[in-house]
Length: 141
Length: 67
Image 1 (cartoon, rainbow over the protein chains, first blue to last red):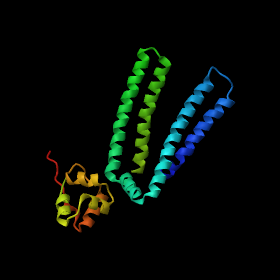
Image 2: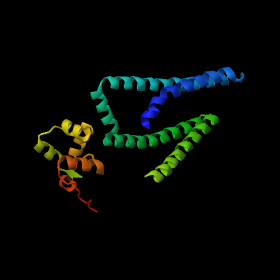
Image 3: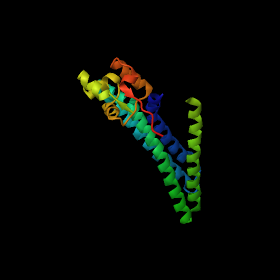
Image 4: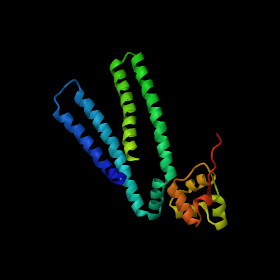
């Protein structure tokens, strides 16, 4: 499942990039919204394409070197490494929450209310996503 | 949890790398298991026990925490 997803990342990047360019061409002129969309989507698309290219290069490199490929697979599946990733992910959840609350407060103090509300919304989505995953894994495990 | 992994490995004359290869885990996992920083999953505990042809209880020593 994970391998399949990795192989699609490059194409996802291209799709997002193309959607960004198409929206720029299709949408009517409206106070620079096209430029913002083009910037955001081509930026995201470029980033995803970059990740996809790294994955493709890594795959090619590992295909040429079976010894390295075996070690890579062991490191990917190693249970201690999985535990490390899970613990890091858990710690990252708290640091993201702290960062989002700091950003929200900063925006509100500086009177950037729209940006402040967007940041507070993102913080709530972050918290809600935790409970959604909790419920999903509660049913799976 | 304490264990006899290092003692058993050295008795058999195998390196951490060789044991890691046999168990299909990283060398760092073997190191962490040996110094008690990491407790294995039940699957890895079985793999280790089967590798040394011993029972899990003969390798891993479970001590109840003092209340």
